[in-house]
Image 1: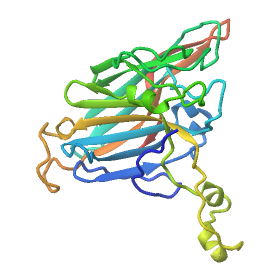
Image 2: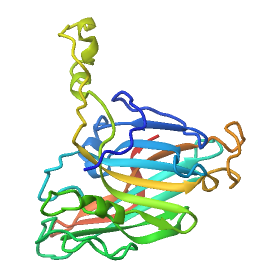
Image 3: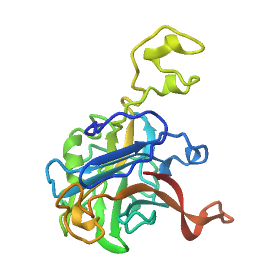
Image 4: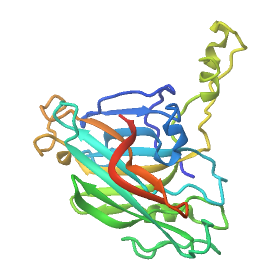
Length: 298
């Protein structure tokens, strides 16, 4: 469990923001929408977009999914859903329609098909091949592909295992580092478990819209108290993407100034599922049809 770099603090309600490649913006939502709350593996919790501090000619976009991951949540833990399609979309001309679309598709392989256990039978080793070797002997092995406007940027990219505990994942930092993939065109991607960086006092907010520091001003007053980070120590699944600014702009050129014509883009992310899900005679789902957006945050 590793806390991501904190960008800012917002309230618990969904925030719509336009992200500039010359600056930064973000938004957040944790299980507020009634329908997607029943589909947690497709639920996007946060979206962050900012000029990369280490590479100012690039933009970093981080989309977080699968909220409230209890670190001790075995034996299944929290893999990405291979039946969902995760996406990041960019509008670079202000018409409200996507111009650049990144799609992330995941595949799951079980080392032992007869077992559903996540961790396998011993300590998980580092990936020996940075281009996608498995983390042996983890039973659940995930890889993914990423496309930009239907053009493949990378495939067979490994997902680090979840942080299970000191016996199974004794050197988690090295596993996470093995999950950072540098692709052609100065594109860098990561998909894996991170500590939820968002701060929200959800217990107070959803208790009749309370704010602990202002408890005395509420219609049902309580003693004042400091705000409480109810997301602390919970994890999310992050998809992080770092790309040159020129990949996102309307003219395919770099941004020369904050007020340049190509300096502002809108970014949103989410997940989609195929339109039809039918259970066959053996109870196995059969999926078909176009992908339909089921969650979105911008």
